[in-house]
Amino acid sequence: MRTARPLASIARLVLAAGLALTSGLAAAADGEVRKIDAAQMRITLKHDAIASLDMPAMTMAYKATSATLLQGLAVGDQVVFEAEKRDGAYVVTAIRKK
Image (cartoon, rainbow, N blue to C red; front, side, top):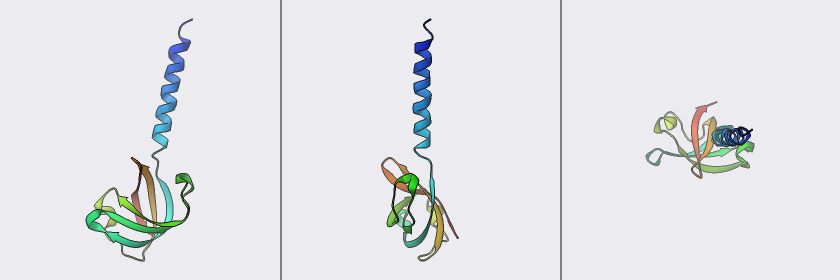
């Protein structure tokens, strides 16, 4: 029966597509706004460890995926945010004040 080989190839493709989709999922964390650079769409956050991104607690600058994410935020705000790795860089995809 020759159908086993095409089915195995399809299974590998489905697995690869699933891994590609899950690798970009956002991870939520608590943090504090340390700096905002609206012109560059960057925000510096002091945050807890983010296990799903293999990131310890730290202070780090992130690129925001949209300038509107930074509106209404100020240095010192306690926030909950979502970050993910895109094209080798960490980006904030969602953020809100606590």
